[in-house]
View (cartoon, rainbow, N blue to C red):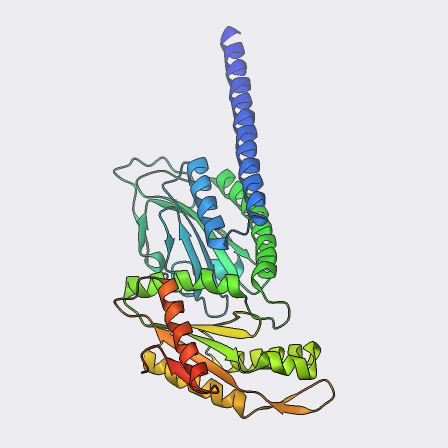
Length: 359
């Protein structure tokens, strides 16, 4: 009888401990969600938000490794790759629909390896190789998710030394991930409002500086080409005085459309100022920037732009461009080089494209 009572007490204690553990886990999850909500209005970039998330979840779950990958569902090209170790270059991820995560991406089902909790000693536990991530672990729990804007992603936990994940871990991570990425999606909507020019639909001056800083660091780290150009509408103040600011807005939108049509999909066109535009061109040499700048200048000069009263006008622009070199210190120096080239184009009569190395 006493043995049975002791057994009942042990069961009750075990149940109580489980309840307390779940409550503590719920509190920790709520703390993380509240922290992420704070980022929604802070203006922090999404990769920094995700960096904070993976660090918190890694500590909270006591896993050795945590990562988030956001990718395009059609091409499987990674757009963001954040791990507990770093904000990493997305091109280092080689996602393959027929690779390690085969079926899990397409069917949006979790992946847990080993598939069930097992009593395995550290010495006998088999390693799991993940070629897509160039990673080797002892176990992995990965949960896929979908953004509302044609992006998909995967949130994963892993242990590199030993350990296992069970069904409860999987269920909790699925629910938590769903709530987290609702917040991330909200964050992205707000960020899009803060980095997008409402008139032209292009990204704005703030985005230009944030993006250029990242691209300069990548170009220096991987010794790749990087160029920028700055476009200034010639005599735009006089145009506004003659035709009015509404007509000026029409011209700004039209020129933005031309610029967007001239750059590559991998370039980043922005509205740089009231009458200025710019473009960041990764993996573009100085000669390549010259070709694009001149093609863009000519296209704008040869296009009759329609005004509100169906009149058509010809507009010209001046363009300055610059490229990184081994001696380029940072983004500020690159911008200064492009602005100096723009000044040369203006001084030499406008309707010209000039590079920072032109005499």
